[in-house]
Image (cartoon, rainbow, N blue to C red):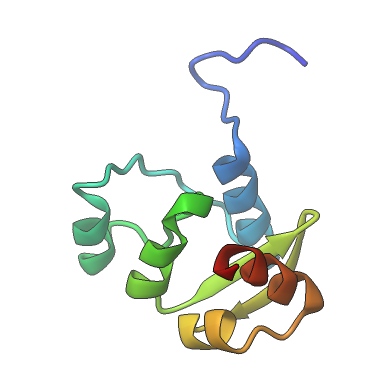
Amino acid sequence: MPAPTASTRIGLDIDVTDLIAAKLGVTAELVPVTSANHIPYLQTNEVNLVVPTLDKMSFARKVSDRVVVMHARRIHEIGPPAQIFGAPQTPELRQFLAAFDG
């Protein structure tokens, strides 16, 4: 793998964003956000998607109107947070969420 450059996009959040964009048939435009500005960006439609890391799942549950769950580079579930976190449809997501509950 070549060394990253200033213009190279790397990281799990980038991979997830690109996969979601491909599934939606669009090209992702990345907007750097911070803890302080991501809520205002969502509220003003400056950004339409925040890809949180695992430690931010409670944040995603509170502020998202739609959650995308991926496993093994495949989208497994898409839906509102109440459905995704409250009534997961796939065994992978049920197992994953059980690990955080226990």
